[in-house]
Amino acid sequence: MIKTKNISFSYTEFEKIDELDAGDRELLISAMKAVENAYAPYSQFKVGAAVRLESGTIIAGTNIENAAFPSGICAERSALAGAVSNHPGDIPVAMAIAANNTEGLTDDPVSPCGNCRQVIIEEEYRNGKPLRIILGGKRKIRIIEKATDLLPLCFTMKFPGFTPR
Ligand code: THU
Image 1 (tube, protein in one colour):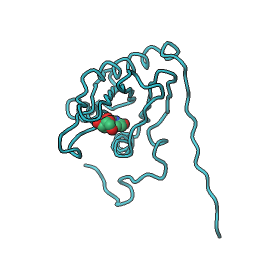
Image 2 (cartoon, helix red, strand yellow):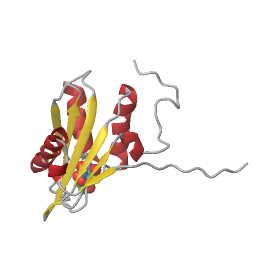
Image 3 (tube, rainbow, N blue to C red):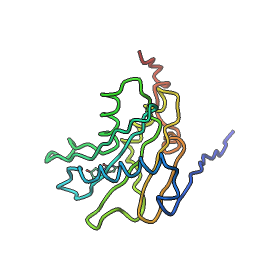
């Protein structure tokens, strides 16, 4: 029997950064500041990400490009790498992302690439805690309540039956 299924999710949209609660605003500002540290000489597209850990600590990351293009890393994975490497056991509960093109902060909020989504959801999945995503642009800000919403029908450790130890 053929069935048509539907997947949908809701997210919140804001017009201005002052509409966010204080914690989310602080996180998004951290991502916006991190943009300044990006190493993006090839694309001129500077991305900043800031991860909020359960303890309240914020860890920022930027994209780091490379002359050998595939060796570059996105801001989201850069931030998560810093968080996981330096704060084991302190669970990431939110991530804010912002990006500048040559004219400054992008009008529309930038969404994480597929590769980053896969890495972000691994964190959410292994910790069993929602990892909120805050996407900041000049004209709008989006909040997605759990990272997995951005990767429906995703591949996780459950398929091969891996048990992380
Ligand atoms: N980039 C990120 O850092 N995060 C994203 O979500 C999308 C793309 C980087 C990769 C590359 O350095 C530049 O933006 C242009 O694609």
